[in-house]
Amino acid sequence: MAGFVDLYTEADTFLHRMDPRVKIFAVLLLSLLALVLSNLYYLLILLAFIFLLLFLARATFSHTMFALKFVLRFMALIIILWPIFDPSGTPMLASLGPIKITEPAIWRGFTSAARVGCLATVWYILMFTTSQRDLVRALVKMGLRFDFGLTLAISLRFLPTFSALIDSIKDAQRARGLELSKGGLLKISRNYVAILVPTIVAALRTADALSLALQSRAYGARADRTYLRDLKMRVSDGIALGVLVAAFVLPVLAKYAFNVKL
Amino acid sequence: MEDGEGEMIPATPMLPREEKIISIHGLRFTYEGGVVALRDINLDISSGEYLAIVGGNGSGKTTLAKNINGLLRPTSGEVVVGGRSLSGRTVADIARTIGYAFQNPDHQLFCSTVEEEVRFGPANLGYPEGEIVKKVRRAIEAMNLESHRKTPPLSMRLGERRRVSIASVIAMDPEVLILDEPTTGLDAQESSELLAKLRRLNEEGKTIILITHDMKLVAEHAKRVVVMSQGRVLLDSDPRGAFSDPELLRQSNLEPPPVALLAHKLSELGIPKDVISPEELVFQIMRERGGP
Image: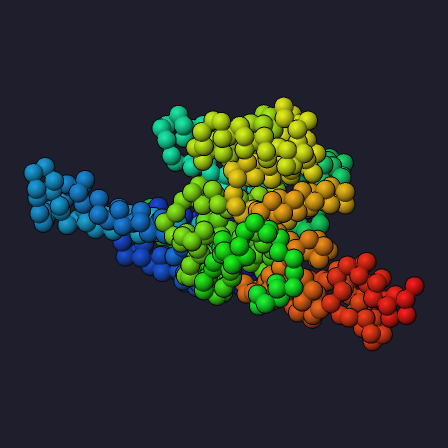
């Protein structure tokens, strides 16, 4: 459960060390690039490039498959459904009543699936190589108000905690003979009161303790915050940024300025 | 390993000692992420026993307890409760035999009065109204909550909330009562009061399983100790046997009670190593010095 909420995995690769701002920017560029490219082969090259990055970030196969499980199902669905609902183009391969299966539609299905694959994987790399703290730090550095950043960080931090809490409360009530899914709709919703009340009470207690902890560490004592850890662009970050901008700008220029079919 | 029990006073004279209420064979449990929590556990618990499962954090004691009441299902092996295998039985069905009081009482309290809270369990199990009233009264009396019948549980102190949560489990009238760290957050007096109440329940014939890492508690109350470490049972004996080997306890990240450690330090002077109570240590020292 916790692994699903936070995909970050500790490691020491150049992608883990990269300035999170560069990473956020890079992910945005690569996502745009995936939307700009409309040729299956170029999309597959982009996908290969993204998987190369994933490999360099030392993502294990099982970890990646677990994280991308839903995306893979979604991609399979696109490949199956696209030709059924898109009757345009020739040659037609098969038809059944109003449903026409055409060859270009099949390719379009694969193209869209590859695009979704690129988008999902590139964001996965960001989540995989950047801790939530670094992400929030980068957002604050890029102009997000600090208290919003802190709120975001705290909510992300407590998602797995609350998911574990709810599991524990469910177990405790089941041990008292509560059968959650038994009975009619009214009975089932009444059953959930036994889960909901302890959860809300625990959430309020946690929030209370948290605000005390923040105050005891002088949160908000001065308006101009200082930072223990500041983000700094290094040479390697600059190079990475340059390479990615080139990887984005060159194909986009080729497509829109020189009308190369991409 | 059960030989050690012979010299102890049987907890419940009314019940035959050999009646196995819980029987665990070759139990293995692996969590979803692949963490092996229990490796090949074999354990027989007789009706009326007062047993402590001890071990450091992550030794598998809570996982074992959750396998006994069906919240977790064995990866392999079998758990038999009351002569019937647990596989295919619902948690609610098992709850008639195995009562489980969770470590944090706030995870189960949700009603607006103590009485309603204690009613919740037996009402879920579908007992007739007259029976529910009787069981609720008995549970409230067992935990000394008579004056708190109409009090909202959430406004009570931690020690009282824990008693409410235990009463709400007792009310289901299970033969076995599992208590997960029941003394956490209680002061000395609240602890000893709670344990006196548990002892009375044990004398009335309930099987008590205490999950804890408080060795003093174990030395004073349990009649049998199961020491766990890394998902295995390291030792299964009476408290005397368990504390005569501090090295073994250390392997399980446990510290023997101070009196047992002192007895060990004094063993060169002829004090036996298996002393578990201060009174006994005083007696042994007196005897060593040739009487008072």
